[in-house]
Length: 192
Image (cartoon, rainbow, N blue to C red; front, side, top):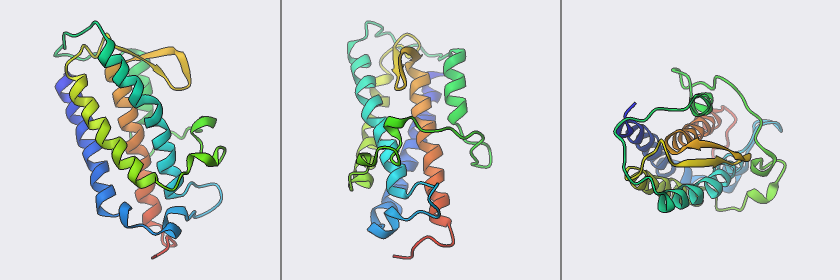
């Protein structure tokens, strides 16, 4: 894929996330934000806090690596590494917007294990994080996304190419946005 196509895909998904916040998420009551269909499923607030915890790790790392790289020559083509492709493909939704594979969230990003992740500002923080991610895409266009390496959140030793890491984060966001939409469509989702 080209770097232009990678940025286009990432931007479209991120803009749709921001649109969903503006359409309905900002209007949710506290009851709706904290409602769960059953004890094993996260609420809207918990899903957003999970996404915000990923942004809290990845966004500063992206910015730091882009700012401090010596690989300033952007390349037209982006080639994923086998590990990178596997990482973002595992997050990517199926053609029917379905989750192909489920994963357990790491302890530090799981709001049921770490309730302190839920701050009460999930919707506003998520929108701010999505807007920041959009600006990160603009910066990423200016560097070689194949050469800049990003340590993943669960292991500082394992590193992904910047392009792969961006796709991983974007598809992870999209996956949980679909989870939010499914929750909202639940017949028992509170009206207010």
